[in-house]
Length: 124
Image (tube, rainbow, N blue to C red; front, side, top):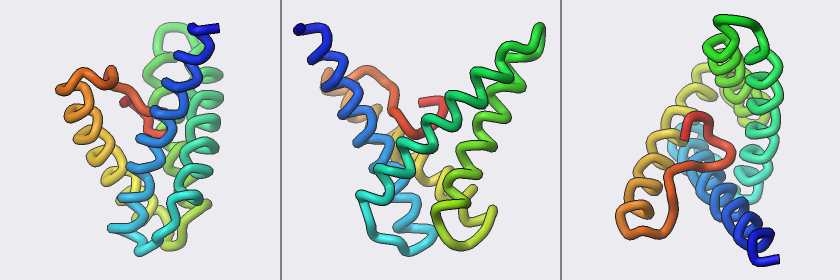
Protein backbone atom coordinates (compact mmCIF):
# COMPACT_ATOMS: atom_id res chain seq x y z
CA UNK A 1 0.00 0.00 0.00
CA UNK A 2 2.85 2.39 0.81
CA UNK A 3 4.45 1.74 -2.60
CA UNK A 4 1.17 2.55 -4.35
CA UNK A 5 0.77 5.80 -2.42
CA UNK A 6 4.38 6.71 -3.18
CA UNK A 7 3.79 6.04 -6.88
CA UNK A 8 0.55 8.05 -6.81
CA UNK A 9 2.18 11.03 -5.10
CA UNK A 10 5.08 10.89 -7.58
CA UNK A 11 2.65 10.79 -10.50
CA UNK A 12 0.64 13.76 -9.21
CA UNK A 13 3.73 15.86 -8.43
CA UNK A 14 5.23 15.02 -11.82
CA UNK A 15 1.97 15.90 -13.58
CA UNK A 16 1.63 19.20 -11.73
CA UNK A 17 5.21 20.17 -12.57
CA UNK A 18 4.74 19.27 -16.24
CA UNK A 19 1.45 21.17 -16.37
CA UNK A 20 3.16 24.15 -14.73
CA UNK A 21 5.67 24.22 -17.59
CA UNK A 22 2.92 24.16 -20.20
CA UNK A 23 1.01 26.80 -18.25
CA UNK A 24 4.06 29.10 -18.17
CA UNK A 25 4.69 28.51 -21.87
CA UNK A 26 1.07 29.23 -22.77
CA UNK A 27 1.01 32.30 -20.53
CA UNK A 28 4.20 33.75 -22.03
CA UNK A 29 3.68 32.78 -25.69
CA UNK A 30 -0.10 32.55 -26.23
CA UNK A 31 -1.37 34.77 -23.37
CA UNK A 32 -3.56 31.93 -22.05
CA UNK A 33 -4.11 31.84 -18.29
CA UNK A 34 -5.75 28.50 -17.45
CA UNK A 35 -3.86 25.99 -15.31
CA UNK A 36 -6.57 23.31 -15.54
CA UNK A 37 -6.32 23.48 -19.34
CA UNK A 38 -2.56 23.03 -19.02
CA UNK A 39 -3.06 19.97 -16.78
CA UNK A 40 -5.30 18.34 -19.39
CA UNK A 41 -2.81 19.27 -22.13
CA UNK A 42 -0.01 17.67 -20.09
CA UNK A 43 -2.00 14.45 -19.64
CA UNK A 44 -2.99 14.19 -23.31
CA UNK A 45 0.49 15.24 -24.48
CA UNK A 46 2.20 12.67 -22.27
CA UNK A 47 -0.13 9.90 -23.43
CA UNK A 48 0.30 10.75 -27.13
CA UNK A 49 4.08 11.10 -26.75
CA UNK A 50 4.29 7.75 -24.93
CA UNK A 51 2.22 5.92 -27.57
CA UNK A 52 4.03 7.41 -30.58
CA UNK A 53 7.52 7.07 -29.09
CA UNK A 54 6.74 3.53 -27.96
CA UNK A 55 5.37 2.36 -31.29
CA UNK A 56 8.14 3.84 -33.42
CA UNK A 57 10.72 2.85 -30.84
CA UNK A 58 10.16 -0.77 -31.90
CA UNK A 59 11.87 -0.19 -35.25
CA UNK A 60 15.20 -2.06 -35.22
CA UNK A 61 18.48 -0.09 -35.03
CA UNK A 62 17.08 3.47 -35.31
CA UNK A 63 13.79 3.04 -33.46
CA UNK A 64 14.68 4.87 -30.30
CA UNK A 65 15.83 7.96 -32.21
CA UNK A 66 12.87 7.96 -34.61
CA UNK A 67 10.49 7.28 -31.74
CA UNK A 68 11.90 10.16 -29.72
CA UNK A 69 11.69 12.62 -32.63
CA UNK A 70 8.19 11.56 -33.68
CA UNK A 71 7.06 11.52 -30.05
CA UNK A 72 8.29 15.07 -29.62
CA UNK A 73 6.50 16.15 -32.81
CA UNK A 74 3.32 14.46 -31.56
CA UNK A 75 3.63 16.33 -28.24
CA UNK A 76 3.98 19.66 -30.08
CA UNK A 77 1.01 18.65 -32.24
CA UNK A 78 -1.10 18.24 -29.07
CA UNK A 79 -0.05 21.71 -27.91
CA UNK A 80 -0.82 23.08 -31.39
CA UNK A 81 -4.27 21.46 -31.29
CA UNK A 82 -5.06 22.84 -27.82
CA UNK A 83 -3.70 26.38 -28.04
CA UNK A 84 -4.29 29.08 -30.68
CA UNK A 85 -1.55 30.44 -32.90
CA UNK A 86 -0.25 27.63 -35.09
CA UNK A 87 2.92 25.56 -35.11
CA UNK A 88 5.29 28.42 -34.27
CA UNK A 89 3.30 29.22 -31.15
CA UNK A 90 3.14 25.53 -30.20
CA UNK A 91 6.92 25.18 -30.57
CA UNK A 92 7.41 28.33 -28.49
CA UNK A 93 5.09 27.02 -25.76
CA UNK A 94 6.98 23.71 -25.79
CA UNK A 95 10.37 25.41 -25.49
CA UNK A 96 9.27 27.66 -22.63
CA UNK A 97 7.57 24.68 -20.95
CA UNK A 98 10.73 22.59 -21.22
CA UNK A 99 12.92 25.39 -19.87
CA UNK A 100 10.61 26.29 -16.98
CA UNK A 101 10.20 22.65 -15.94
CA UNK A 102 13.96 22.17 -16.10
CA UNK A 103 14.47 25.13 -13.75
CA UNK A 104 11.82 23.86 -11.32
CA UNK A 105 13.28 20.34 -11.32
CA UNK A 106 16.82 21.59 -10.76
CA UNK A 107 15.61 23.64 -7.79
CA UNK A 108 13.52 20.79 -6.33
CA UNK A 109 16.28 18.24 -6.86
CA UNK A 110 18.74 20.63 -5.24
CA UNK A 111 16.73 20.61 -2.02
CA UNK A 112 16.22 16.84 -2.24
CA UNK A 113 12.47 16.97 -2.89
CA UNK A 114 12.25 15.12 -6.23
CA UNK A 115 14.35 13.33 -8.80
CA UNK A 116 14.45 14.96 -12.23
CA UNK A 117 11.43 14.08 -14.37
CA UNK A 118 8.04 15.53 -15.24
CA UNK A 119 4.95 14.02 -16.81
CA UNK A 120 3.70 16.00 -19.78
CA UNK A 121 7.05 17.44 -20.90
CA UNK A 122 9.23 15.09 -22.97
CA UNK A 123 12.86 14.38 -22.05
CA UNK A 124 12.53 15.62 -18.48
